[in-house]
Length: 343
Image (tube, rainbow, N blue to C red):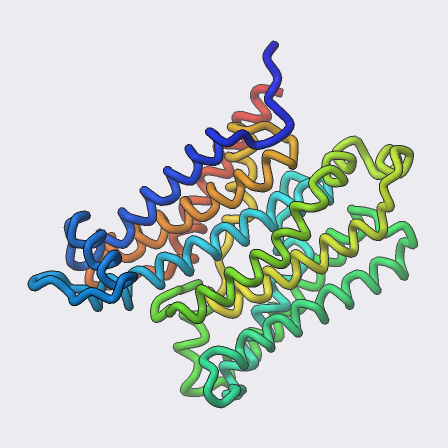
């Protein structure tokens, strides 16, 4: 039986990158008004090199509306999928993703508080929401790990998941209370909680990219340790893995990356849960291959989901979180059924 290599090979990177770029080009071209591929590439090329826009090409729509949104969608998809793959490996639980710990809920609570009470930083768009989301994501992680440590000094997987589920329910009740008394902000908060990247710009894309480079690198750095977790925490200790240290570092990196993503995109479910499973079917369970591949697949999936949300009920726009939940739930049931059947 032929085994998959331990590392991503160059041609595999090229294939995944080509698929992601093709999906990105499709999402930039398609919309309420379809734009030919040639005009899209011309507009982007002319903008990069400072050339004037050709007559008849909507360069402003392509470069300043669609392209930054698609970039943000791709980066958020890559971040959420990477976090999901890391959490599934760390907790050895196929139902785990970044939201399992309650970190996504904590980040959402911080963002909702920022929106409801108008917490902003002058001159920097969404900075207040982003900072509040990151701070609450870290506070959520601190609370969950503290409670888990008090209950179980070994920080076992089951204890962390249990505390995370309870914490998520608690945070959801607080968010409901805030939304009830938010007044004029209620509509924007509810739309945000369903997930949306409309109005995204290049500063948002740069923020997500910076977070993905910093914290994504940390997560991928521990891919070997995540492979060791697959055989159990005790066995990981026996092969020299500092279990507590690796857990804390990966959890902190996941929390920070989720905090930045949630502050910009809102609550988007199932990306971190479903895409690692689908990617694992293609590249195998080795995290040195799985984590990079999950980033590409997550970016592609979320871009296509955003495209469906934009064009399905045109001129109305479906929140991207609604689309991912609808598609993701069906796909996950199929994956779960086929896996159980094969087992």
